Picture: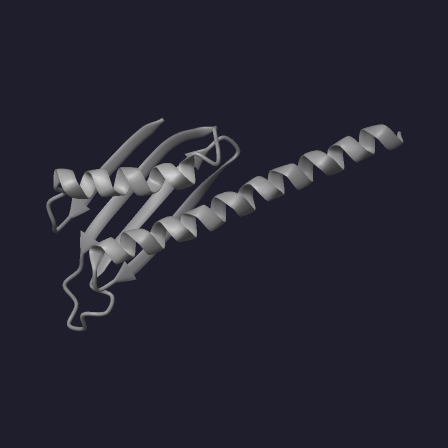
Length: 111
């Protein structure tokens, strides 16, 4: 698995890199066929402070891709929210795979 963490208008510090890596490990360990993970942390020049800092990730999996974006006034909160969304998407993706495999198995048994 390749993990790429980059920053847009901000510097990715070692502490920030470690935080992202630890948080992503929780969601990624649910699925063993991860090819590539790309994380983009950015600071947008917005007047309002609400959605100023964002974290987005793209996960390339065997059989599909997942993309998640989250914005918040705090970058660490945006990362937490992004990982929670990613975790839900990974679970949903795995359920679809199980359901698809189960239906294919039923068809072969009934024929």
